Length: 241
Image (cartoon, rainbow, N blue to C red):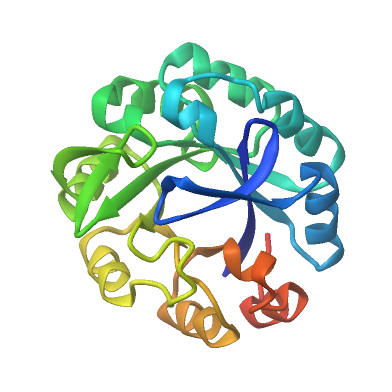
């Protein structure tokens, strides 16, 4: 299982939110690049980055900082947030990201997903499914898309998507453990590689997700709050390719 420590960017700062609520934003690190380098020192091969301003309103004020991480950290960057159109997608992929995560646009403009798959293949593309109470949310988690998460995952798999980043908003930033039941339901519904996001808190969470056979897990607040030692988590997870 690969582990992807996370860096969320807003207004040029490394921040965390609780349950995706922008009113709870607080800074957790001073430099995205230095944070990414610490991830690498702990044994990480990947970093999961989110452009929160891009997700909410499409602005790219964080991209200079994200680009520094892409070019200088030595990590593979999985990037989501603000990929709303084909031009956005081209900008992100050509910047050197290892995998682009298409979120809201997968719901509103699935042709963006189809284009990405045809141009770069399934290994460079993931679909981010962000859900609350089993329902897909879009626009920086602020809008209900009116779709069941599992049904939407099946639809994306039918398009050729091989990787899904699945976030249960209710657990995100709460240090209360992942939504194992929802992850199991998703595993049973699709054959895609699943990256668990939200609630990963302890080494026991890492072990359980690994034993479930998940492809990956994102570590966010647990790293910054000190509830999880990243180097130890990397050893437990195993394969980091």
